[in-house]
Image (tube, rainbow, N blue to C red; front, side, top):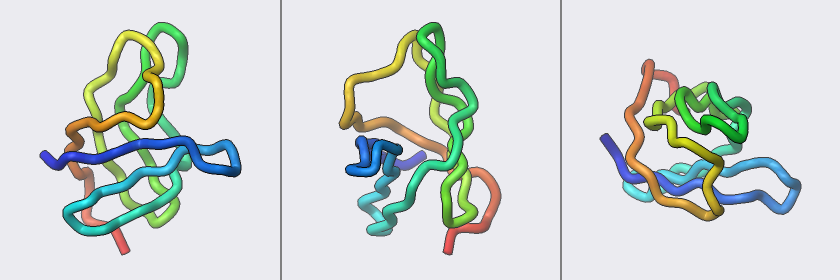
Length: 75
């Protein structure tokens, strides 16, 4: 598992940042994105996918979380 950061982009979307690899990408979709549950699978604009454990409500951004990489596409 890796430490990641999610922040609000100037354009209004969300940005995923993985410091260990200096990877920054826009988040295209989040598996759970409601007031009752937030997180799950994150799909990135570069083809990568990560999983964060869902939490009970949307967090205040920016937030640091632990994420697990899904699949192999990343660049």
